[in-house]
Length: 282
Image (cartoon, rainbow, N blue to C red; front, side):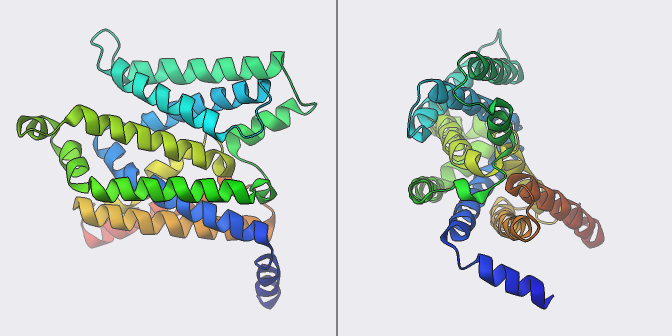
């Protein structure tokens, strides 16, 4: 145990470790806030769909040799979030079908472009890192941390400012619209915030694992708590703990960061499921 503590203390003295910790905590916090809303609205797969879109945008940015691709990927993902919401309201194309159509299409096009216009000799490694997250936290730079911090603060601020409206749209959209709430605008706002979260989370957990950060903390909190506020607070605490603990484990045992965080999230889900049954609330 003393050796592990000594090793952790040594690693924590390096800036790249603090970069990973800061980014991981911020991403987890933002993801958990919207996760409860997405689960209750039965729109959980929007995160999965937009993560595939972000992968396609990342591939296009790589082909175009864009040095700072986060803003390009963010713009494309936000546009697709808007299109996804509009398409989902089309009576000819239902919501789940539109998500599948856009996500699979973006994933296929992105992989095709990376193969045809390959800019790296290690194509499989690049694809694997993009899909499942980088195996090394050394990839996080100071600029990426600042961008993540600004976007995270923006997401949290928007959620707090529009908390009551998001609550209304989440539980009874028809009633909210009847009393004058612009439900279309707030649904669009939720989709755009999710797009922001997807983009800032890609470097940490990869495009295929982002949905886990959004869904698992919310589902875990729902095993024990029932009110929207308590579930949201508990979800945020679970997400931050799992992210921090997952990063520490990945550092200590040289495991992939994203997959380790998701594994901790899964473990916490089962813990809360047992707690919920013990308390008689699940």
